[in-house]
Length: 178
Ligand code: GDP
Ligand code: MG
Image (cartoon, rainbow, N blue to C red; front, side, top):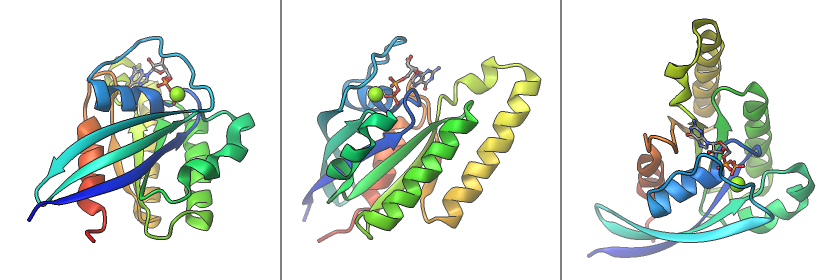
């Protein structure tokens, strides 16, 4: 029969990487060019049907600012899944993403399903050739990093909706069936 799964999911990553925008796209199908910074964290829920199950995601969209770092464990503790988001045009946001992966692997649920989202993929075409080269290098680095650390990697765009549902869908498929 069809299973109902409740899954706590947390989004982590640098401020400005697009966490809130990904959630807004997934939950409401919208995008806001001047998305306001998240204060503390925001909660959303959204249901997704996969082959054998209906997954109700309980989503915690965290702020990302360093001053809220100490709150993060409240959101990732007990989480079944995490999406670690970085901005593909911003090397520093990738470095921050790696720190989150380390922290989750040290302190999080050992069975947590983790996705690395290289967000703002739409900016790749819009940028100049020389800027693109470094972005492509960073993408390769992110792919290799994800593979090495047992995450799956996807390039996303909250703006165009590319791969946004797919990230959640891939997570839903990987969640343990109980
Ligand atoms: P957060 O701090 O990680 O929650 O990031 P936000 O969702 O607030 O997004 C920060 C800024 O990046 C906002 O101005 C968004 O409109 C913009 N943004 C978010 N996702 C994308 C995307 O996929 N493409 C582009 N071009 N801009 C994006
Ligand atoms: Mg936010």
